[in-house]
Each structure stands twice: as structure tokens, then as C-alpha cells.
Image (tube, rainbow, N blue to C red):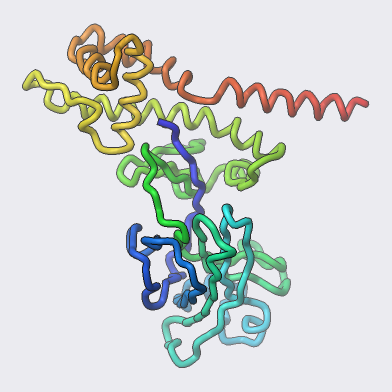
Length: 338
């Protein structure tokens, strides 16, 4: 299984972006209405209505003086809808309009209607509301006071213009979050939510590189090379968890087949079986060979302690990525010496 790391930012709980009303021809395929997909690709233009709800106390906590009713706030903070579609090569910001009638003592409400011509869009579109500082204010420690600073962001919404096709294997998201287990930890696999957490206390430069969205170039090469050891480690953790699930009924002399596991454990265990039992003629035979090896205590220890660390490396791109980043470093060094 190839783990696809789609980086996601931790959103502010006080900002809630929603699709307002239904979009004809779509269905909800994500949790809490975060992802919509057309059942068939639309042929005519359509509108998307958004509503943004911001808790006033959350917004107030981002301001040096905390005054959300002042002219300084009204003239220097702007709510925007950020949209991006990689397949369409389109991204931008649209200003959200405050709805004074719907706003109350606890929250501000902002709205926006965005028109979409499907002839110009492909794949999916990601949407996120951001609170943006448009003017610099007096610097104060602990606050983002520079122009263009982002004060907060909402949970991301996604719309598939082209009907969504589920991936054949598992996929893990990466997001910045808190890791309080130990100090000096860079990342952690959240097994409950199947998310890779990147420590929000890690150096900002590291976070910037690992969250870089470039498809090509030096930063992309560096990001991929730095990520690959994480991919290897996470794959091994998932494999060990898959083996644990396969051995759940060991007392009854029954080892569960990889094909009977849920994703992403099914894909991980199946990939391990293919590498470990490559002499077998079919996937079913490979899976059965892995089952047999895990059933025998001696073979099990050999698989987990000796074979597994090597297999997860062979499944990765670590060798080629290290080769690429080494070339970039040497070429940069040579140019600096000229």
C-alpha cells in the first residue's frame, strides 16, 4: 500500500464554514457534510452558497486589544473564502460579506455566492474560510500583527466536480496538532482517527517544508525525502497493527486473512504478503502463506523482527528520493563554489 500524505491544517474550532442549502446532483461522501460529490459531471453552470459562522470570543482572542467592535477591527480584518483546485490549476480568494441581520451577540455570520462553470473546473475544489489581516497594527507578543497574517481558518470543505472514485488502498491525512505524550516528538500515528499528527511544537521551518504543496522543485524534493522515513515508520506501525488484528482469534487456532481486514490494514498486510511470499502464484496463496507464517511462533518472530523492517523499506521510495535530494544538495554546493 502506498500511503498518500495529503497535508491538512488544524482548523480553528470557532470558525465554521458550511455549504448553505443543497447542490443539485451531489451527495455527501464525507463526515459532517465536509465533502460533496456530483453523481454525474455537471454540464451547466451552478452556484454554491456558503455561510461562515465565527464565535466572537474566539475572534476577539486573536486581536491585541480584543475589541471586535472597533473601527480598527472593521478596517483591518477581512473574512475570505480561499478556493483551490489542483487539477484545474485555479486558486484564489473571495471576500465574504457580513450578514448583520443573522449575526447575534455570540457570533458573526458571513455569506457568499460563488458561481461555477464546470467547463473551467476539473477534479475537486477545496474551500476554506480564513480571517486575514489586511493592515498592519502595533506589534504585540503572541499576536499576528503583520499585514496578510492569517488569524484563523475553518475546517476545509471539498466538492468533487468529477464524480469521486474511492482509492483502492488506504490513505492517511497529515495535519498539524498537539502531541503531549513525550517531548521532542515530530509526528505520531493517531490510530483511532487514522491520521498522522505533525507536532505543532516542532520547528516552524520543518512544518513549512513538510506542508509545502509544490509539485516540483527543490522544496518538493526536500519535502518528499524528509517525509519518506515517516512513511516507512507509519507503514511498519500499520503492519504491526494488522498482524495484531489477524492474530485476534489465535486462541481458537484461527488466523484472519489480510483480505478480511478493513482498510488501511487490508492493503498493508496484502503488500507485506506479496513481498514475503512472492513465489506464490496468486494473491490468495500469498495471503495464506502469511497466515501460515504468523501461525507458527518462530516464523512469526522472524517476520515481525527481521523481515518486516526490510520489507517496508523495499515498498518505499526512500532510495530514489535520497538519491534525488543528494543530487540537489551537491549541485547547489557546486554552484556556490563556482
